[in-house]
Image (tube, rainbow, N blue to C red; front, side, top):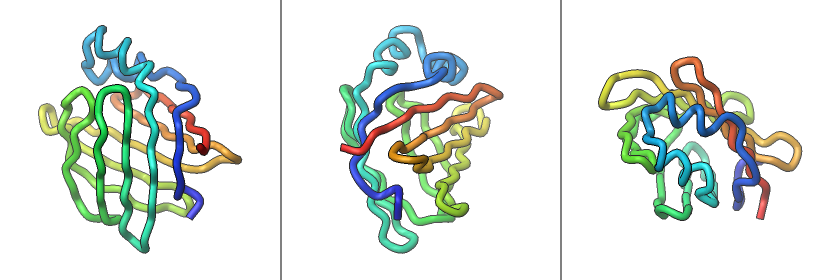
Length: 132
C-alpha cells in the first residue's frame, strides 16, 4: 500500500492552534511543534503496525481496521476509537476518554508526501511527512 514506509515530518500547518484546542499547555505546544516525528507504517491485510519516534517518545501501535483500540497521545491524552480505510486514505475516529469529544484523523499519500490531518472541535491541522 502507498502508506507503507518510513516517513519524517517536514512541516506542519496550524498544528500549534490544534494543540491549543486540545488543551495542551503552552510549553508542551512549543516542544510538540518541534518533535522531529518519524513514523513507520506497515500494512498486512487489515492489520497495521505504526511505529512513532520523536524527541519525546518511541511507541509501536498495532491495530486492525474497524476494530476499536486505545491510544495515548504524546501529551498523555487518552483516546479510544478506530481506523478504517476509505480508498487509499486511513480515516480515524477517536473519542477522548476525559471529555468524550471526537478527534478525527486522516492519513493519505499525495504525490511523494504523507499528509496527516487532524480535526478537533472545528480546528484542523496538518502534518506533512516526506519519505526517508
